[in-house]
Length: 133
Image 1 (cartoon, rainbow, N blue to C red):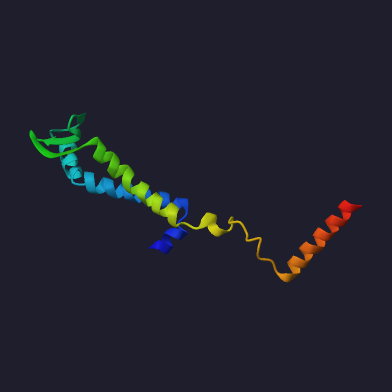
Image 2 (image 1 turned 60 degrees about the vertical axis):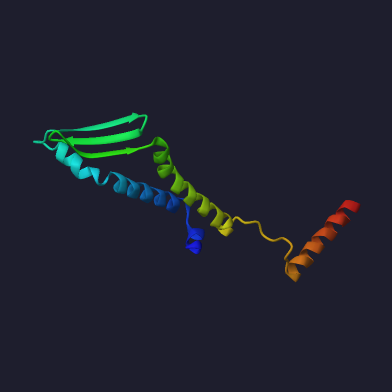
């Protein structure tokens, strides 16, 4: 898995975040969907209530006078679930990625072939001789 993070591009990271958020939505609100569909159907008598208070954010689905589904979460927990894992994924990606795709990495100027070193010496000698004239 460490090698795969090295190859990820920002687009793949963003897609991983979107997949996480979709999965989080399915896991947390998935059980509420059947109750919402029953309560809001064309011939149903129900209601859907969302509120924010001292206990946090709550969602209640009422169908035929009875609570069909109810869920509550603190705002802190919601923020941590939404932001925390993508932030950790970004941090791991940032630490493990290649240095600017290795194309933009600075070349090692200390390693020259013999021919390149000779050309460099000839250039330096010409520059010195032109300065002395």
